[in-house]
Every structure is written in structure tokens, then in C-alpha cells.
Image (cartoon, rainbow, N blue to C red; front, side, top):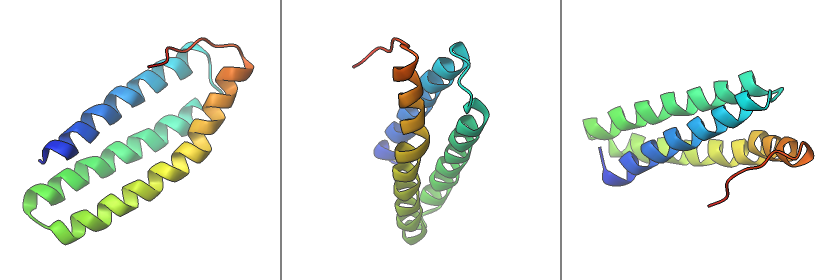
Length: 96
């Protein structure tokens, strides 16, 4: 696995863990749907890793573009709704 792909995988898992804890602690109403999307992305990253490791770079580039598109939609949809919920409910978050 490439270093960049490994870093993306590690960051994604850490970010999703933080999201999951926040949603569970504050009874986020869209918890199930949000975590299902996270699970699908992790599955896609696993598939991308296997494809990359097999040497199929053309397929890997297509998969990266697909993940980029998915991420944009997720951030503008699910993550924005979570952010709004957090703000509207006065939930404290740690900012980096």
C-alpha cells in the first residue's frame, strides 16, 4: 500500500471514530445512516488498497476519483447536517 493511501486510511478511521463517539454521546438522530455511509467508505478504501496492491493503477485512479466524489457529497450532506445538529444543540467540540 502506498504511504498516501495508508495515511488516508488511518485518518479516515480516526475521523470516523471521533464522529461515531460524538453522535452516540449526543443521541444524533441520523446516527445509523451516517455510520452506514462511513462503513461503505471504509469498504471502498479496503477495495482500493487491494486494487492498488495488485498493480491495477488504471482502476485505482478511477476508484480514487469515485472516493473523491463520494467524500464531497458526504461532507456537503451528512457532515453538514451533523455540524448543524452540534451547533444547534450547543454540543462542545474540540477544534484542531
